[in-house]
Length: 441
Image 1: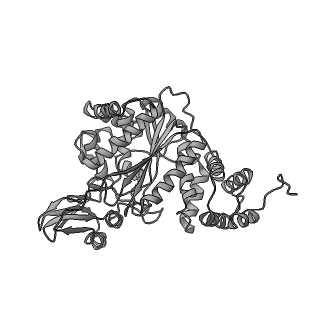
Image 2: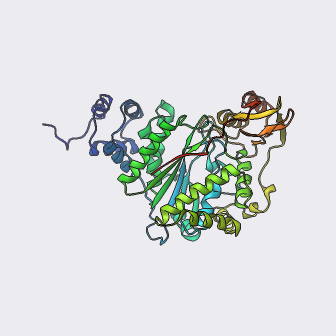
Image 3: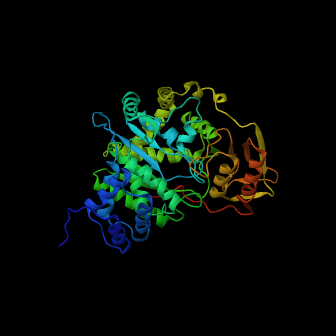
């Protein structure tokens, strides 16, 4: 008879998971606790994570694993706030600056949004990198300051602190180095442990689908979405997942400072139609989670009014100042850095843009220096790409397809090798595709 109270053997747990057996709750909790405390070596944890990639985690295992990660460090307590606490998370895309204008728009409607964001890696941009292109803006906040800012302004835009879900930070770094990133349970638990640590009343997920997304097809995106919805249910937190198109970049700007400028355009009411519509759609879902009986049309009207009245911009300026940034940036775009070099890509023929490839544009932005190929890389806030033509647009030969801001001519040449293949122009317009593919609850 097995003694369930004996000290577990990590080797035994690796073998059992490798062979497709379910682990018990105390065993999974033990793994997370002891790896976070440096009591399990990296090589054993790497082997265990690869076993999870092969064999997965069932619903009970996943709930336990997420719970253990969630409580591996401090948990933010916002229970004293009288307003609903709703957050949003994107699985990552190209030109995806949605969170930056969305958060103040929703907060201006009376909802607290305690947002913890990440940095860009690979071809996808990071919200923190974009925010840090605002002069002085600080994203590294301790939990006390995090709560204080939410209490005052209803929002905060910060990164993961050293003490918040430390197990996730350690495990993700190991996954990135060992080829174990692409696992539905590991992706879902990584996202949800950080979000649940915020003490939320609800969460909206923006699950990207397409060439510029980690999920290349809708069925894979649905599987990931259902996994995260299930974790939310296990923790009594309602989750809505919106599947959105990422075959082409979102909005017109791809970079860091230029995406802040576009975010300010959205807050002024004249941003690109696609990203503005997605912000309003996700904002509706957030307000409906905050007040389940609310009419969708009323929610949309409230969001639009928060922009038209200037209240959302005021909220954004206030949180910029609270996090050390220069609030004058909302009125003076010249405070945002722009790389000195300028280059234009022009249409080689007349016709309709049938493809504007998100992956190619995202990788080109990384080559310019707007993103990072490795975690230790720095980013250049002033470089980037502004798209003048996207799928469905009519262009004439010689029309500008994109304007590039660059610093290093060699980096520009490396980026042009990708951008030359990013557009496809044909005689017939492409079939229109919806931006919002599906919504799961």
